[in-house]
Image (cartoon, rainbow, N blue to C red):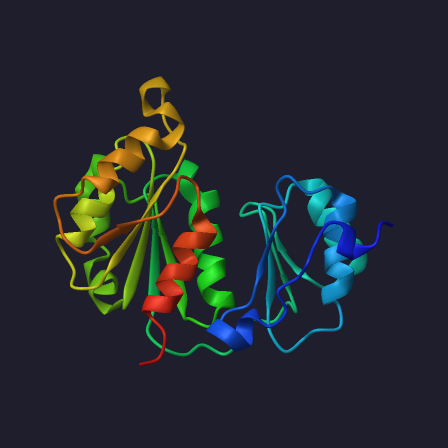
Length: 220
């Protein structure tokens, strides 16, 4: 295995510096590189290390070094150590507009949980049936921060932001037919949201959405 310093310089002090640990973005890295990073983190159990965008080969590499690590294949996320930290601060609610948006919504959900927030998920609440999101109105209004994952027309964050006082983190997804342009249409719709209080992360960036929501909901 190549020496770690030949391909990575881990920011092991990030948690102490800004309160949240470094995450390992697996896409574009080889399984061997991800395994080397996992080995370097094996003895560090004080803070959670997240491995995001982990394809099956990346997950196998991490689990080969850290066999007890938490792994969610749908979200493409692994966590070490596997235990979720005790929750503090306000609650994060994650909405998935459709079933196809679930991988990105789950990435946001798990990120918020592993960064120390109580987080829950509501699924299949897109604008094609407004009664479905309205059925969650009590939960929406109890949340400190809300993540809304949506593709297609990307309209759901505006709807949600018009119903609640909490900040809404809009997560555009690459779900949709041709004119959705792999999430670009949803991204532009969310950037043009009429309702105030909407922040937008990049297309499919569930980790970024969950992280921002966790920071918003941090203990005051």
